[in-house]
Length: 82
Image (cartoon, rainbow, N blue to C red; front, side, top):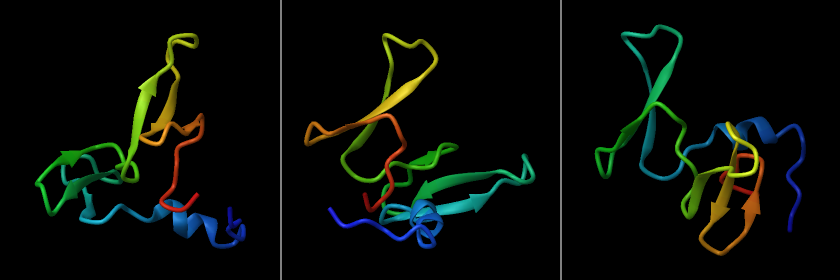
């Protein structure tokens, strides 16, 4: 696994999966929503990289973890490159 230099990480975190676009909200100034230009899907939450799902924790109510289709698990929100 290749480590990403710290000075580059903010840019990696702000990248969006293919087809997604960040749009400023007209009704909530200062916030953004996301639209998938390929499927038309819209969401207020930043989309996860392909293959990842957000899961609700059963042992820690109110918290979440992330599951990749390969079986990999993470408590931190995954970036496009990890």
